[in-house]
Image 1 (cartoon, one colour):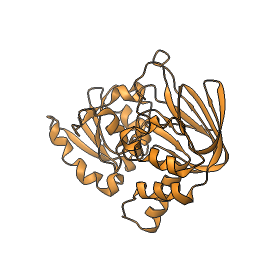
Image 2: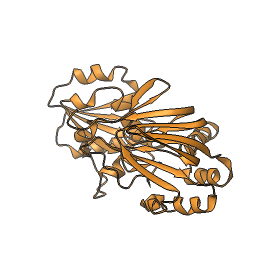
Image 3: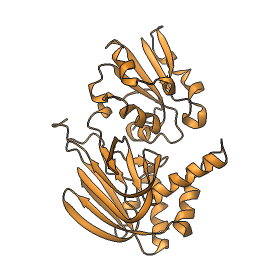
Length: 289
């Protein structure tokens, strides 16, 4: 049996229609279309499947985040495939080097996934944690969705507005593998499991989500002046921003703690958490996993 599981809200509510054509890729005539939002016990649902069954997840990065936080994906016996139907699809940008834009088996990416802890609550994330102006962008985007349902959110415009006048810099304490450094005039400190977030921004071009050492990339953006910052951000979609090493610092490690001196919005795979002063990230290496 092939289970085609879709998130009807993904891709600005176009995912259900898009997923209808996915089943044609697989030869089996036994197919079931499942609305993920109607599955209350995902772990129990999968437990009742046969090991030979196949699962196709249709949705975006938020859908994958829901998947990894609903079931222990490292112990799944079934083949898990992914078809990108979201508005950003950053996970797919990261793994689809050949830009085939098709259905992709993702079991190997669902092991040794990092955790983030905020206010004592721990969850898994597939792409990255955005803290600072990237969290601000998600917070403002949520406001647009509420006030103008159906309207596509223009994150580059929101980011530009924040960079020019709306977002206020913070001071940050960043601890990576036990080494603490303090930074002033901080704009953002994301921790990245993959290279992309924010709908195609290559925030961490040197990050490999399959690295054996369980390492994430921490990118600290700190600048008192806005003009060099705007220059750096103009190159982030191609991952060229790290060359501005006077205002952008990259640190790699397995245990990360980031603390701001005032509450700021944070995003986990695109989902917003407001009023955060600290987050912690941990990722195991593959030997421990």
